[in-house]
Figure 1 (tube, protein in one colour):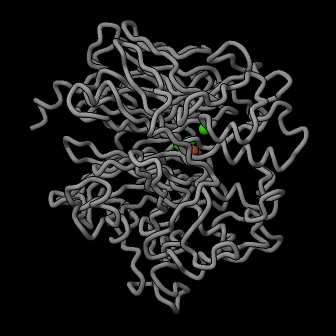
Figure 2 (cartoon, protein in one colour; figure 1 turned 135 degrees about the horizontal axis):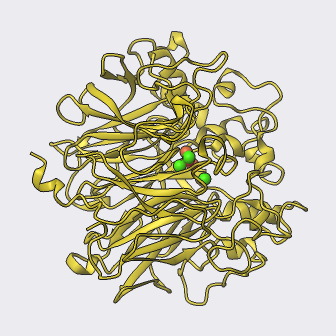
Figure 3 (cartoon, helix red, strand yellow; figure 1 turned 180 degrees about the vertical axis):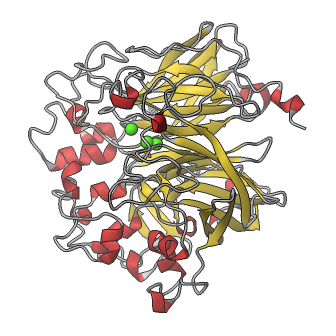
Length: 588
Ligand code: FEO
Ligand code: CA
Ligand code: CA
Ligand code: CA
């Protein structure tokens, strides 16, 4: 039954050869151009401060400019039909910062101003973009343009809002939190809102000398704060003084990009995790199903099913849809079947006697709850995607070199390779509609390099070589886009000797061939992809070009590892626009 739909599942382009480059390379007949770089004005008012090549912009200026380290991205059309593919809003994540590049002298000195600039460089951008002919530009001034940072007030809603574990000195009600951070993968809703996910929040909090059991399970310990040094000037990030602030991060945040005055909302019903992405699709009767990976070694894969159906009327009519529903965690069985286990207080082991006082505590301690339920410990679940044609669901498992190691979980059916350096993509089909409790699964592909000697690193790719799949998106026609995040310390070495750069590949999931569409500049990660509704413009984010293996650049020689995109100043994360030179459909 997929024949007609799959006819257009476009991988009709010539594969890009892998090689070390310091530019964005796309197939013959395509052009990639830079649209929105770290430091570019977001365009909320006319005459916003321009980026200074030596990174001497202040914290206040940074709060009006694109953040650092672009990640997940989504396009919301403004207008219908052809108009909607020529003008729209881009919402995108700014995951984290490289303090070596962010400040003129890097981390040589440290100050409240530097912490404020780092906080302002995190979060989300909403920018208005338009196309004239083939050329896209950021609209400025735009009434929609907005920066959301790690200091922007946001609401907590759902079962954990107001919980005793969420109350702080600054917010005794436990319902208002400042900011979102480490925004990695994303999602979007059919009612027009953006979902941004808080991933490695533990790295922002300085832990106590003697962490308690809850803090330990989430990796909070003394010394974590050294990564960003926020706690030195913002005491809410010192968990010894404010232990509950830590519980207010690790959520999926919903943002209405069409209303620049709207308050972002942390949706606690979706559970707390080192959230990667949030792929949302609807059941036949209109309920929202959200698939979410938790990107950490041996953590879990989640699904939320809303209680209510989506209503007509856009964001206003669906303001509480993601506050009511059931969260599940996946167990993958060796027989190719699997089950979604409910994280519901009072069911099974999730009782007060077992340390879960109520539903709020189950959600705040979702890892502990999933441990009790016997969910499957995965090889770092990153993005998920629902095939709009077949309703099959996919998740990238980026890598896990600890799998099968000493005192580490052994290989299992779903995570079948020890020292899994290359990663894999798992696929499942629900038994019936997307809200089903049981599913059938298999491995869509084991990534690897067929020329390697080590059997577990070879994989079974049909097509071009890749490893460490991370960003994943299936476009409306059903073409799968796979983006890679090979760490900078590994690119071009060991199992990655033949893979010097990160990349994006396209795949027709009905026949399985995977073909390389894009190479990123030196030292970058390729992450975040979306297209206009006419499929003739693609937006891709390039994160941390020129990153050093230490993730801290040398401010005295910032372009040592990459000169992209400007060839002067500093390498800058950026949104890239890709068009076919004949104006045709991408991949056709
Ligand atoms: Fe921010 Fe899991 O990548
Ligand atoms: Ca990622
Ligand atoms: Ca990653
Ligand atoms: Ca990265």
